[in-house]
Image: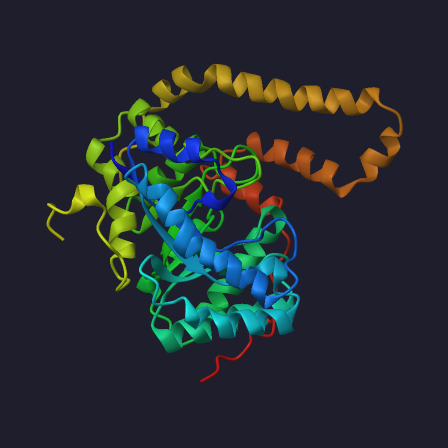
Length: 275
Length: 90
């Protein structure tokens, strides 16, 4: 089955991962800007990172017939440095017209601090000014519920935000309805220990349905599986769910969300399908 | 509207997942045993994380159809409705 991984950090993965993902049916990925494992020291470090996202990865993915898209921001872990964050946000527009950029992300909260909230709001200001889609990281583990509530508060407090143009990512059992019931898209991240297993993600789909929900591997430099989305496909098949429902979650939903970006390009395999 | 998909029948879930559930329960039992074999068990008994694990085990014995959500909330920090939301600019 063709699928899209809507959240994966390919900068941290080897080329063989692209190969195996293509073998499993991956036709497109989207790569949000994230924390490199260390705090970067200057805006130039981010400029080089963004060049990697908009120039290097699309070429690497294309070798395997995979379309590569990206999102730009300074992540929440580095938002404690407000001065650097503001410099990076001011630099982002240099890259917004690159052909593979889908919007602003993954912005969000990490430890739910005041500075993180301020920089989150300033990213939303940029997205509103430039009419970009927004991809949101919600915090990990014990910080997730509180952080997701705070993020939803900020989104609802900003009258410029159109919920159907926002994806709240890394939802789990206790946060999925906060996203869906307020009109946002949501993503479930399939991680071995700290987020959703494929089985729990399918449980969530059984509880909330297949509208406005996606699944991703969030594969990165940590313990993660770039083939996690095909694992979800197998789990849904094992439970006897219809192919149409599986396809909607792993293929049609990401396309429906991404098509709202003016820079979305149909993967080659979709060119003959009606919009 | 969220189009629903049919959940698997309860007997089939039991059939498919019994061994997995047994395995995970044994893992938890073994972790608790491992702690009690080590020294400084009194420190662990006072640790709030231990209390949460034991509280989670009580949730498993209840009748709620949303045990996973309840356990997620048990392991979550409290949310303050009165936190100061930054103002949008422009």
